[in-house]
Image (cartoon, rainbow, N blue to C red):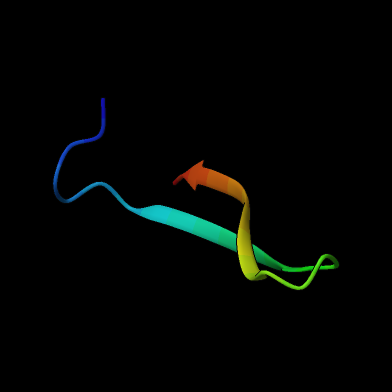
Length: 29
């Protein structure tokens, strides 16, 4: 699981269906 203090990078991209931003990728750094 994820622990508090872990660095997490959220990669967002435009949703072509018009819902706004969606999470395309989540990376643990």
